[in-house]
Image (cartoon, rainbow over all chains, first blue to last red; front, side, top):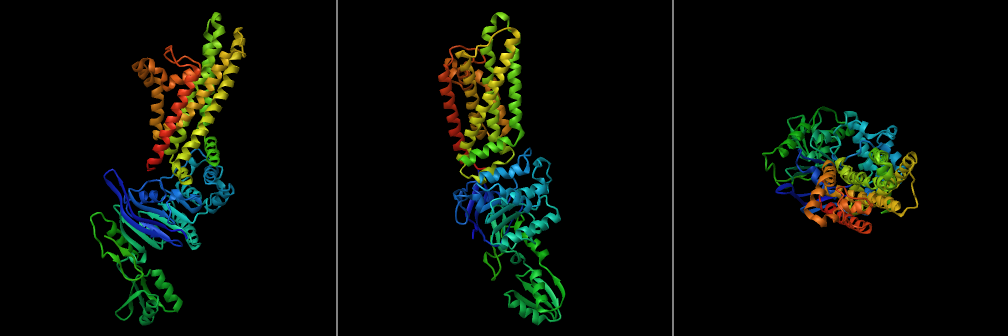
Length: 311
Length: 246
């Protein structure tokens, strides 16, 4: 079990505070979204986790250790940074052979990861001719070479079409289900909302929210049913906070629409309406990351199962 | 370390720029020697072999660029991120590159020497001259030239790590050789013979560009150039460890 963590992490470039007093944990077995607008300090934070940028103060740790102290780093962590480059004149297979060689991995892994990301036919092609989507897949193949316990992906949705996104989501789900830690950065919540379990939101280098995605929404999921009492009891039993409004509507806090729908279906309770918190998720995200808002909500952990907002 | 060294060779082999530099170097050797031997008056034909073989050492310009591209090129294409993710001990990466580009420089030197000897033999035969392969002078020029290539390969790695902008590094290196060292040499007077390019010329047993006499002996040139290589690599390692990879 290898988790990623930042402890009062700070990075200043000259007088600019790129990252300030940032603390979070991305646990094993989950997909954690690392969100914030462009320039929020996401990539700088990831580079500190990867030992590429030295923190001004604080710690960035992989399984409790500094990346640079890992004896075989690629077997522990695979990363695709937005700025990771490839030599355009090199063939895809050679590129991965070099990475495998540098990490002391068996050359046989090259074929395996190319198959895993669906690039098996491109092994002899020069990377210069690749589309954005193919480059994203190649980057992912490189990250997977060492069969790592932790995967860090910086803006993986860039350049992927909807089909590619769905494919990536499935791949990451599978990896998290195997108990791996997955950290995915993005500046657009909607790109990763369907993929992540937890989110860490930063703005101007500071933590604004960390916790389950569902807890981010200020508003509840609204469900309509002819058997409101029954559904309320069922959902309360799953430790969601439920309000009954009127004679057929329920407001459910801390849950996603999927969770409510599945719970109702499993119990055979018919729903006549279900409105997710999706829209309010996006609103909450924008509110947290808009530049003029300094304090959004109460500090400290909110209700059980919810995340914590930060000033 | 062996793993890193092997890997750097693989990186070098799998892009075309190295092979193109090697080919261009051979063209330059053939053209340079042809020019030197074809136009010389028959009376001076005996001394022309050493002069022509001096072109082997001049290929060090190519190995310098090759070494620069090895590091600054990785920053340019941002492959340096993957390199440092695989081996976070950055000093070892620079050390491996130094070893590899020293050897690559040797390879350039040896191939250029073969090309130079063959070209000289053919030209002298054509002009009715003779080529004494038993001459110490000739072998001092050939072996010194090869050593210069190797040293400049290693120094190039240092330059590329210190100036991470690829274009900036190549321009700085070429400007130094074409212009700045000449100016520095004039300013320094006699002490100018300790400058890197002149040390290399001394090592290769060839007169420096401006023909200034009173240079270093071949051994001194070799030692001074080795000292430059060590200095550049020590600086390159410390700077590479300290600087953030942004």
